[in-house]
Image (cartoon, rainbow over all chains, first blue to last red; front, side, top):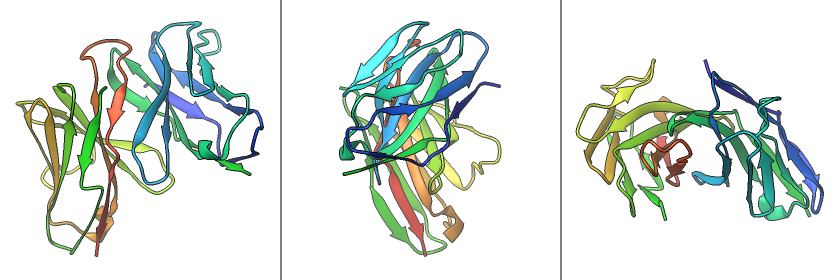
Length: 111
Length: 118
């Protein structure tokens, strides 16, 4: 079945460091890909998305590019802030159905 | 747009009682809503898919008689945890799709409900 794999956390960075959280997927066909963020005690918020190969999703300084050849959707940010500390989930979906989430990666940014 | 409101945000109840959690789509209609459960430091586990006007579809291993789902309107789905026990303590999150059937439609999540059963 379809699956999403993320790098294991926790990831601890200093403020203004460069962030990469790896995400790879296994699916039959070409799903839409998403990154969600969960702040402590809250639900998930959509961070960005991409619907086809080579699309780049971006929001709040975060970016991710849909790479069909490597079945990846790595999340990047050039300079993280303390307020970016959260859990990040990579997910895939076909036609808005059957979302599959990765295990989540916890990010801690230290001042 | 596409706001999902979940209520209550936290609840403490005694073992054996029932708890109802509401999930509302505030500015869009949602024929389908999803209920997830999340254990500490773990990912989301899909419990069931709630369909407006019909029975919910439960994932394998989820007791439908324990977790009652009602989706009576296009903007409201409820999850009732019946005869709650301490092992039901968890974080429950609902979500709804924005544009129905669109390939790129994301899920919009409520803020979750922290249930503690004593």
